[in-house]
Structures are given as structure tokens and as C-alpha cells.
Image (cartoon, rainbow, N blue to C red; front, side):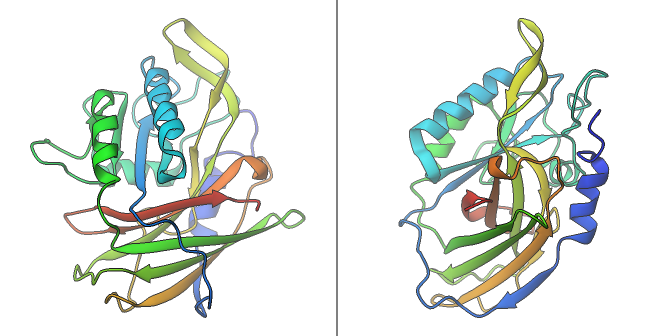
Length: 273
């Protein structure tokens, strides 16, 4: 990587120094997302993966079809993710490595996990490119157990971002391990990528996982999770100067943290309102 601030060190800074969380009073009149569960697709990719651009095209087509109902995170981790010597950036992050370990190493790329759910008759969480559209459509029809909203603010001088996450419990959750996750993703980053036509220097990478405002595996929720309960969380971080704030988004999702890792709801907003 040739731009030093945008390094694994920067990612470690977000993980180790910027994951504080404090409760805030509930918002009296929150903006509620439309009924229905949104879907999270976590794509595992790498700049040395010749087939991954085709996977990225599939995800872009799904995003075009479903809009904000589908949220994508592209995680550069695994054997295809090391940058080239001439790469401008190293898209790998400690958080991405931990998430890959949590969700399981794939047998091949491109691969993705849909709502972190292990579907019937599937060997593991990782799904091949041809399976993504069907499982995304299926998950969109599942009623949400929680609703989420994000209210963000960004100070362009200090580069401090504040994310206020409002959680509304729609259906009582009895699972003892429920977690909230907040990620920063960045769009429109041009750098090297292996494609079927060869190594492309100006390939545009999208929804790249840059870091987490929570722990990589989420922060345990200890609030009352009976139907009708509402509470809020606040996360504050300082964003590295090399990240284009206007191209960054905040992604918040609630997921299970035990043997089942299902995502119960996900939302995203632009980091700069």
C-alpha cells in the first residue's frame, strides 16, 4: 500500500480506539423503516480473484433491483486479498479477517453470506454466486423481529462521525446472545483488480469494509428484548483522512451471536448526511 494512512494500522485504530458505546435517551419520534426485513449480503472478495468482478456485477444488479432493502458489504479477506506491489491500497482489515473466521472459510470465490443464515440443505453459510438472488428474495419476505434507524453526523474538521442507532423490538427475542454491529463501508475506490481481461489498474471497488465501530463480531445487547421495547446506542469514531467521507456509509445490523448467526435487521445511511 502506498498511501500510508489507509493501512492496516488505520483499521486497527478504529478497532482498538474508536469502538466506544454509550446509551442515549430514546428518540421521541423516530423515523421508522418500511415494514419488512432488509437483507445483508456479505461478499468475500480479493483483488487477486479473477472471478470476483462477475460476483460484484451480480450484487450491483441485486442492489439495482431492491434498492435500500438490500445492503452489501464487500470484505477483502482470505487468500485472494493481498494487494499487488503496485496497488495503491490494502483493503484488508483486522475486522474482515475476524468476520471471515466467524462465518467460515469458503471453498471458492466469488462467495457471499446472506443474512448470516445457514439455509436448509446447505453445507455452511457461504453461498455461490448463482444462489444469491434466490436467497436474497426469500429473506426479504421474512417479517423483522427488530427495526433499526441510524441518525449520523460528521464533523469535517475533526473527521469525527457519530452514529445514533435506535432499536425497536417488534417480536420478543429469547436468544441469550444478540448483538449489534456497526460497520463503515466505502464506495468508488479505484485500484488494481484482476479481471478475465487481465490486471486492471482503475477498477472501481464498491462497499468495501473499512472498519467497525463495534467489535468485529458485534457488541452484546443486554437490554430488554421483549416486544415493544425501545432503546438507543451511540457510537463515535474518528475517520482516517484517506477515506473519502462523502463516499462512506454506515451499516448497522442486529444479529444472533451463538451457533445461529442470523441477521435480524440491517439498515444503512450515508456517513455524511
